[in-house]
Amino acid sequence: MAKLQFGNSSCQIEGVYVPVADMNLAAGDSVYFSHHVLLWKDPQVNVTNMSLKGAWKRMFAGLPLIMTQAEGPGHIAFSKDDPGELIPVALQPGQSIDVREHMLLAATSNVTYDWFNSGVWFQTGSGKETETHYPVGHYMDRFTSPQTPGLLLLHAGGNIFVRNLAQGQTILVKPTALVFKSPTVQMQLHFEQPNMRFTTWGTWGNRYLWLRLTGPGRVAIQSVFERLEGESRNMTGCSNATATRW
Image (cartoon, rainbow, N blue to C red):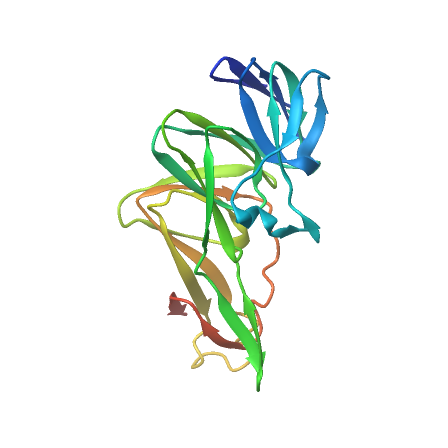
């Protein structure tokens, strides 16, 4: 069990298969979270709705995503009700982190929130019918700690692995395996497919679609990830990308 200290409060990460963040909030300390991750709390912990940027009106599983705030003193616990791993991300004053949608479990209230268009997409289809796919999501969340140290708790599937990329260093990851990245890390699509001179069948089915991440900065990858929709279909267009034939 890992125990984290933030301000006068603490957070104990408990469990292995479906981890729980058990927070002991001091008087005046507060955190915000999505309403569906609340597991239990002491009666004296005050829970209220929290007003954030309009982007929180984006839909989650067909329901409005309601952000909630809890203020101490007292204990409160959060769980995503899903197997995986909890990773704490400490933010120093002025530091930001870019996170894929729906990874957030909770954040200290001094951490501000914004969002941006991921800019990573590709289109598939035939004739006049096309479909646009966003392999890392249409939007990404950006969390910043403007003046004082802040704490993010993220939940991802399976295990989480963090890489520190040097200037110009690249890594290829499956797009749905990305958890977070530093704002300095650039991302674009990367395609690998057999050379048509050596194979005449299954060209689209054998194509591999990656997310190319270029440093400097940190990236976090989860070991459980979703199958990418549209990866093997006929492609009609895409955002900035690189390609390799073999």
